[in-house]
Image 1 (cartoon, each protein chain N blue to C red):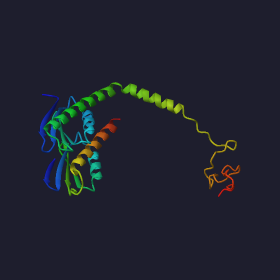
Image 2 (image 1 turned 45 degrees about the vertical axis):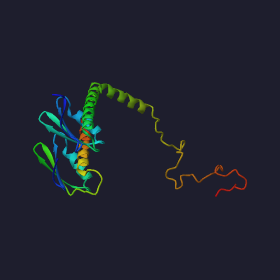
Image 3 (image 1 turned 45 degrees about the horizontal axis):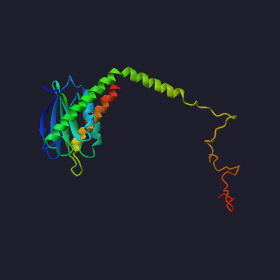
Image 4 (image 1 turned 135 degrees about the vertical axis):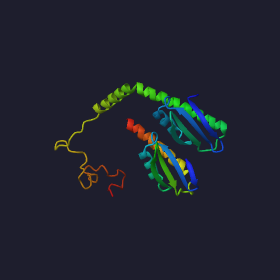
Length: 152
Length: 81
């Protein structure tokens, strides 16, 4: 018996049912593969004894050949997700260490927050009614063009 | 999934694959398009869908199933994290 078996295939409703061995494809892998197909098929999962049943109904009409292709793509996705799952499991410690080092490095490089003092006042007075932006003691906002010396 | 008549459908979600919270969340999201009644029956959550809106594009019940699956997958993943 193959790992993934087409149980039913109905081009009239663009529907097929797959049966797969629980021992070969754990639930995480099944979820991940099914998730990938949500944009192009309606997916309903079920469990019968030691096998998962996957019912796929394409969102657009498909003939029998296209439905078999869909089943093959689902099986490929199961394999890809199973491998991904295995790689993540095998490298979990390395992934955690790399992330920890990256976070520690980013934290160490951050500029310290300096509290404002009378000698070191804040650039913007947050409690001021105008935040000081209308005060122009040095005439910076005054236009340089002749005839426009006054600000509005 | 079984259809009783044109406006009522019964869906069976296996408990090991669909969490009750995921189904309830999907039902809440689709509450404007149909009425949902969730009950337990052995190894399954059974959802009776009625008063299904017919004046919308797409298959409301099938989209609800996809939504419940996506919620279950996300919940399972975050539960493992």
